[in-house]
Length: 491
Ligand code: HEC
Ligand code: HEC
Image (cartoon, helix red, strand yellow):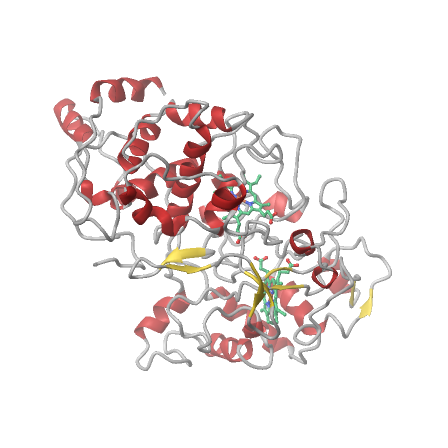
């Protein structure tokens, strides 16, 4: 299987005959898709469907997509600098309703490795082996997308009525990421705020890509009947999961990945790193103890697919952020999922990939579940000194003001603090700077491109699934080109 993970090409295959390109040539105009987005055709049908669902403004006022809060230029978090600096939580499609959390990145949560096996985020479990048996896995800051929502909790058979080959092809995409999409931003009034699943389905059915890719990916026409809408909606969630798990979304092409790949012995110190970056790495895996939590493989950071999270939950003692609209009560994190008091205030350890990815240097990013920190320098200084400095008398101050006043406000939830690893690291200013330099090497060097304008394809069975192209013969579904071309102009 020639699946190259660090590039846009997913596999080598004969170029698909592009129906509309023929029209383009006939009229001598530029109907060809944007060259930068040629990758759309290298995705499987299911992945392309998921990518288009991700970028389409499927929302109450048709003004918001998944990519509003999970933008490419920031590595999958919110794309508005002012919001990050101010209210942190992103106002929903209706322009009024708003949640109370920072969008975590949707990248590197889970992905498929070179042989097509799901890696990363596992099903939520209350007793994962670790320091002590503790909860791990699941999606969301509090882990409530446990990975069995669609099948067990909502009792939906995604593969109902389909040839069993779809189950063997797509079952790997069920789990926390599919659960999260099913949870679901599309119909959450705080987010995209569509009235119901049926309206989501009809908006998708109103697009050429929606009808064609659904049919190519699932072997069925997309009809939004009330009887089937639960299954269809779950299939959209599986498609979103497939794209989010693809190498188009998870590129593993940061400076660290490239330097590691080209390094002679494949070990740190890396030739491609500056001395400061190499120092930062050593601190990360040493005195600064970051690896206690921000490490997915037990290999001192040389793993090809290192995600910089162990998927556990901790309370690092982030101060409360009073700037979030309506000044919400402290967020109890994992407690909301387990109802156990020893989980109050614990939040999921986020990946550190792309923590510094930003569209331009002065763009502000917000860090941790409530976005109180506005720079890597601030949060690293916090890790170093949280339990050493005095508690600020004013808990309404910003991180910048707290640093100026040489204090930290009290933790948002002053219980279950991870003091064994956080808060008194005895790092010098140079050490802190080295850690920040190291974190910056985790930024992907390329970004996801939005999908190009959809032009109908002729069916190509090799786009059904990356790994099983030989074993799944399928008749080309009957597709009405005339209808699809007409509707392209009607969109
Ligand atoms: C209004 C902003 C907003 C929109 C729109 C939005 N998200 Fe999110 N997303 C969030 C926030 C906030 C969270 C964290 C919520 C929580 O932890 O309770 C989140 C969490 C996630 C996660 C979990 C990541 C992890 O590691 O736990 C994934 C995956 C994700 N979103 C994907 C999507 C997809 C797919 C869509 C579109 C169907 C979408 N998001 C639309 C704000 C948004
Ligand atoms: C005890 C576990 C633990 C240790 C040790 C730890 N972290 Fe974290 N880290 C977390 C958790 C949990 C969060 C999320 C906290 C929250 O949202 O309240 C986090 C958040 C972050 C974030 C914000 C990421 C984002 O997307 O918002 C950065 C950056 C970070 N850590 C870097 C570091 C560095 C650098 C070190 C070492 C100095 C370190 N961490 C040590 C558990 C840990």
